[in-house]
Length: 243
Image (tube, rainbow, N blue to C red; front, side, top):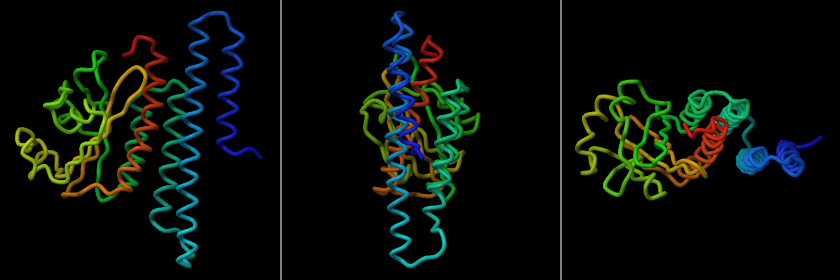
């Protein structure tokens, strides 16, 4: 029986094969783009399997007969990731696919954390909320500037590096936005860049209490952003206009 990674790679190989048969350059590009996404999904699936194996080994070493909370959360993430990628591949709405990822990511991080996605405008100068936070917050931050003098997702998107704020009340850069943080009940804010070949975006993790990101938190966020990049790339490619 084929593994999930093997099945995904077979899909990629089929897309490459079809790309070599068509004469239309745009259609060939479509097949090649889809093949690349299948391969990224295979890589993400392989990483997930490695995480699962480590957790299982840890459980056995401790002599536990019940599933640890970490493994339960990991399995929930696997389901969420798979559902999100399926929605994207079937041409579903970007908000729907990323919404699945936000719920799965929030569950894994735990302690009341909330995940949200933002996507840049075509010019790459401002960010716009896609899913994850209440309408009032989405409206207030719509058009958030991307740049070196920004903060949180605006800065992470500009530098391509995570911006990890353990406590917004202790960071001077957050002074203009502290009232928003208080209104929407969060103290910690971690921002991670998402890059695709066509558009930049970001993942934000909001926590109710001050919270420093651990190495494991950052590693997990990288897995989330990788999955989100595939979803966003597929959506933009399917729409053609880059909207």
